[in-house]
Length: 253
Image (cartoon, rainbow, N blue to C red; front, side):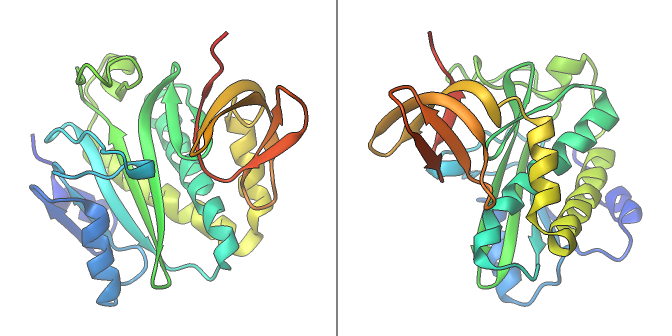
């Protein structure tokens, strides 16, 4: 069933919401809106994406009518070095809403994954574009199956919670929570967001992981977050490395 956009607009009065039946990617549409001067808080979403973007150039699986795929335009007075913390703020925002509305326990995997029972239920993509921050969210809501390549690592709220969830209430809640956590970052600095993220994440500290880097795989134990939102990794061979980008996974024994 298609999302009831008018119901969402009623829940979020005064907000510009553009909703498409099909689109290449909501991130590209948000770029165009931002360039045209769209106000902070503008949301662009779609029932399905032909070229949904994941992190590191990966594609986001976007079946029609089953998930939430949207990008919100944020206009925050932040120095560029704070943009990575925006990704963490979005993770906190999503986990807050999911736990409140579904009762499912969420885990945050640095930097941009929300997990339920160890499987990915939501991915976040943050881009700085001509002074605007594009906050992209892909949430698996009512999917009952995934392509074979994703089946072992992806899940949905429906698979985990055993019920069908109304996407309208979820979307409105997510947008409000994104606004709230972005405001915390803008007014209170990075520390409150870093603290919240670390509290909600089993990956932030003390977890044995392997990190896929351009030059290979690094293995070690996570050692907390830096002031800029990057991940400290205590390497198996000794020493420490700050991970600024890379795919983090539990270590294979």
